[in-house]
Image (cartoon, rainbow, N blue to C red; front, side):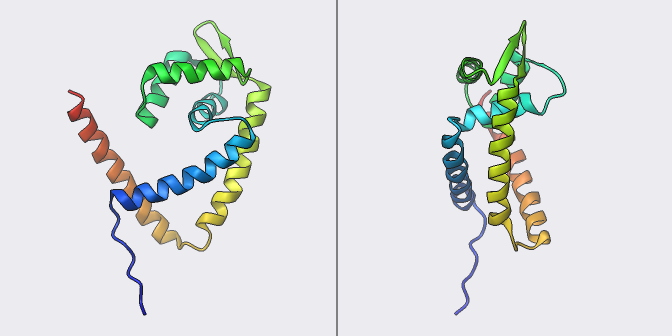
Length: 147
């Protein structure tokens, strides 16, 4: 019996997203982090210098399609946890923040390697192209709906 792979659609993409996110959130819970906190912390951790707070918030809003007020709250949570520090209008990752980011990234990287193991490179490239196009088109539709 041959099983036919499903055609990629919103449901298939959503199921894959939520399965992966559940894995990530399980890891993050051990570090006392949320998904939004990690996304925000990552942007500060990979920056070469302190980042403008408003720019950081804007990047998270754009990536996660969430309200700016919520992201400001997340930045405050990271400040309270001392994972980032305020410097006038900027924030910078602290040593503790860098440590948490690196530990969580290493652990999730190992899990991701197992999840993606043995998937042919050409399949991953095709999926990447399709998902990039879907993201671009969805962002265009969202911009139209927001007008």
